[in-house]
Image (cartoon, rainbow, N blue to C red):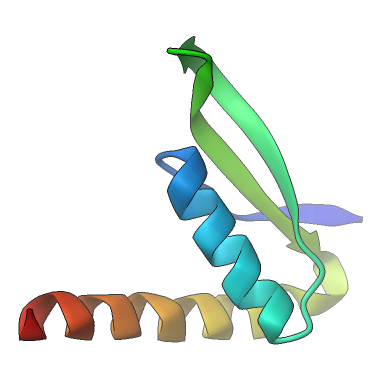
Length: 74
C-alpha cells in the first residue's frame, strides 16, 4: 500500500525529491493535487510504500538538511 510521505509545493520540488529517493533505492510515486496554474498542478503528493516509510522519512530529512545547508552557504 502507498502512503503520503510529503506534499511538495510544485512539480520541480516533487521531481527533485523523487530523484533523491530513487537514488537511495526507494520506490516513489507522484500524485498531482490542487489547481492547475499555467498547465501545471500547484501541489504534488510524494508517495512511498508503507514498508519503506520510515527509511523514506530519514532520507527526506537528510535531503532537506542538505538543501538548507547549501542555501546558508550561498
